[in-house]
Length: 374
Length: 260
Image (cartoon, rainbow over all chains, first blue to last red; front, side, top):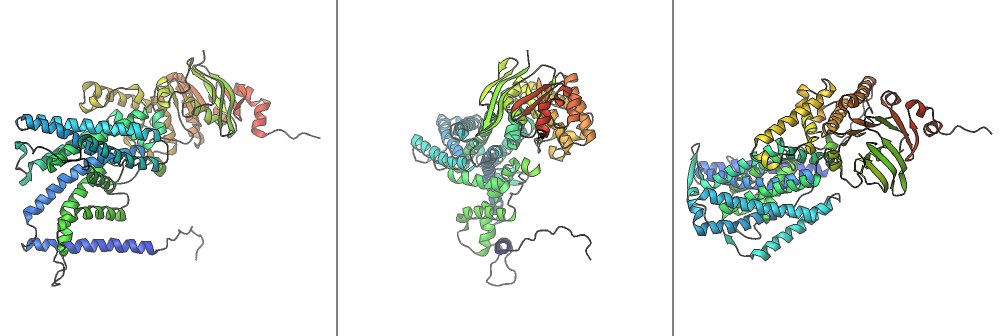
């Protein structure tokens, strides 16, 4: 007996798309679990990477450790790049697809500094100084490229629909890429090998880590902490967050919006520059297309972590780095798929798709805005 | 000399005339109410004064100098602050941070000194924090203590309004423009806000221009009342003068039907 008729909740029909998405969710989970653990007791079925390792025929324990560490190192760099996407998205609400090229410009230009240091012998005799200066050159280059891009291409488009700066950024990406090709040619530039002090392995908490990878992880972690402090604690950081929430009001509080937006691009660029040198330190070779894949991966990392969220960019970067280094062997190899390490990009982008299906806002994403919270 | 002087100001939006040949002035230390029926152009006047929109013609003088064409952040630096009819606080920043942002143009330490945490930087941050706390204490105990570190979206509606006023004060303005500060408030909150508007002038020496619909508030706070209708000033004077003005009654209630 109903005395009071409650407003009926709108029933959502469980339609075709929903069932498809659930099938994908469950299918993906099963795929991963079977890849790791296999199907016990079924002869001839997938063995599972875990049991392969335990039975001694799969990847060894040390190899897993190395994969994990190199995933962390790679991921830290993705995180650094992701920051640039995330900061700009937070403040202006569009994806700056030219950011991969900002990263590339730092890596490419700093090559000349590194090369000069190596020729002069300073690279070996004063590694900290030389590396520090190389990083400074990269930061300066990337910052200038990022700020100029904003000044020339995006500022005039402020206030136009979001799609317009987005498309423009793709155009800028090509423009910068081929400008650098015009400037420096399309040959690979080979960075000097990491200085002697960074050769070999160091032992941290009983784990042996390649010193170059350790450098990458430490430098990115320190940069992240500095940046976080900057945004959370300082006057300019506050202004940035204020603009991200409400640009008009921020201006009324006396914030010079143009200057703070330039600063946002500068900060993102500087981080990409650092990442550029670290990248070159690990992979040695850079050229004008170097920015493409890391740029896309950085964007993926930003989305996976929750775009607009700084900590999310870093976490997303680490997640993508780990997934693409450990994932292929952990999941695909368990299924008996051959030559899995060539499939790392497939795994990384599948991870993106899965994150978007399971948790569309990203790992740490909780897009906060005035309209939603109001 | 008037602190703020508006001369033959005109603004239209694609044929709809929002402000038409408007003249009015605000003297230093005054509390002026701007009233008028909906759509009379009150908020537009505020938008024009704060540089959020550009007038089509006319002149706005602040301390005797034209301010037309200046951007909102520059005008904040000159000493003009405002609040909004629909509250617009930075919802995801803490109460204290909201007020700290407002001191942006009164501070100077940049990124470099922040990274190295120089003595000057730390001193300035400390000052900003103290000043923010002082401004918030203007509202008694409502926005102090544990509230400092609460994000603004957790505040009640009335407290958000108070925070918005605090933020405006923190920019250290000479004149503050309040757009319906008591909208949506209950009678006791409204009384409190009325008293506060008076204190803005008496304790802090800030000139106040307030858009208000609540006639009790208008009566209690105003030194002078300006009435707008269809973007024009139709009356001006004390509360008593204005409320007995025929034009004003007509604007609010319509023309009485004529007997045949």
